[in-house]
Length: 346
View 1 (cartoon, rainbow, N blue to C red):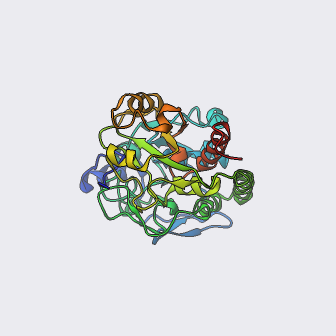
View 2: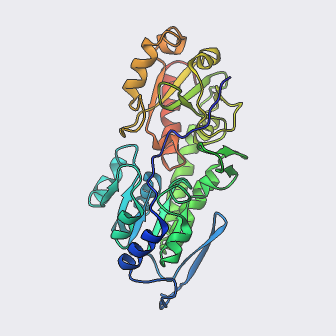
View 3: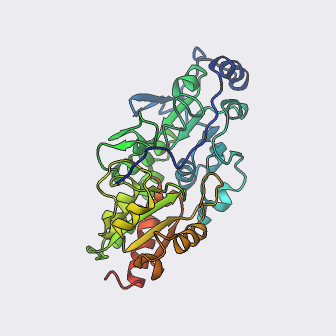
């Protein structure tokens, strides 16, 4: 099997540190020496991905640098705290449309450091280290030096090595507990712990219902993007949670790469029973939408005669359902329903 390691997700613009600092001091109005009066019950600190996130009061002007983080904050009822959002792959969840309607979209992909600082955040959050880190919008230290708190999802740092050029290697499988930890951390930071527990309880209940599905002899392949060298899900990221919940087998469960690139000959060799397709609305890679992926599979000489393709056993999921996010649960629900529709599950 030919496997490359690049990224299906992100394009970023780095800003020189000296310029960033000058812009930030003007925008944020405070450096690290600024003294703040702690609010009742504060300061609050969170051990977060090897760093400490500290806030003196519930943040009032947050920039969420990834869609997954934004949708958690909105699900916690914190839309009025969001000063901006960025890096989207899909339309917003319908139930969050009203609360999220007026949040400024700073960029469809990654904004520049200057753009973020222009909205004067007191905190930034992110789903991926490639967004909030070296080579991304800015490092956490750059924000901290300007008095801006930061939070990175533990789904992208616990049991994961992001030191390579791609989307990282899972040294241990992603778990829902990591996502629940993110929800609870953010709820604590914003003093809405009860909302966090209610969100976690709802996700757990929905997953318990999905686990009633039985489809142990079914192999599934997850294609995120790119038709030249497709990004297929490895064993242990978000699709791993979906696969384990539904009880199927991932056709590429022998690689721990988050989204390794493979060739179409390898796909044909694996011959999955069902093909899950990322149905993206962004414009970053080739074959972004589910329709574009289906058209490609039905016309490519290597894939058009695969049983899954000939029998149209396709399942289209949002990009966020294939990322570590609250939408993983909806992804598992949809896959379970489709497997029953295909006659492949009880």
